[in-house]
Length: 280
Image (cartoon, rainbow, N blue to C red):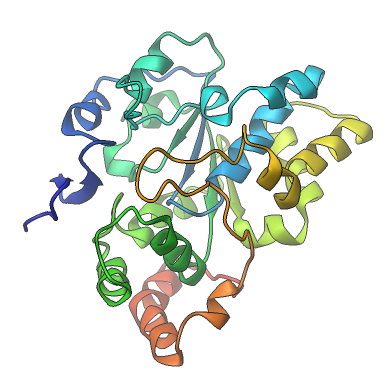
């Protein structure tokens, strides 16, 4: 299979060459996992920025103002990313960071540092329904295709970081592990404060109501949208901001009935096999 210009395949998974070179992905095999690490994992455009904002504010709850002044990408480095303007892989930045480290990744289970599955650090996994993910990821423009081409490639799992279903399936099946907190994007939209409380409990961080309320406020879409330390522009693709609309169910006004049905036919049987159902 030939990758588009500027992209490459790594163990059958498509990646953007400048951001996720083979050298960085190779380094995952030797990356040292620490017991007190926290990994925030998602398929792209599934609430990653949102979840790491919440987690990092909980960690820095003693001084929320100071914490929120630090760029989110510095608070929670992107494990497999090589930032074009820095040329330093995320894993190298993390090697020199003091514990506890908070780490972001979109890698499939088979490409993650395998020490994760022996050391068993804490993992927050956020899942979002495939229809909203597909549209949001298309608009992020980390691909060279038309809508029709992108749509078909998404259904085949041939987009950057690979297959949506493969990414989500492993963590759903391990959702009851003691070190895993599995969250749904749609539930976070419906009850943000409740989700902040779940995450703080998972991190063994007891928050008073005033702090809980303030973290919830700072983690709301409207506030994050205006916070350039959270909603920073990427240095690749179309230099889009991290946050776009932040809605659940936006697919209803974008997908045709035929496209919606095609997604159902691609994923529903596989989701049913593992007992996973989304609120659309």
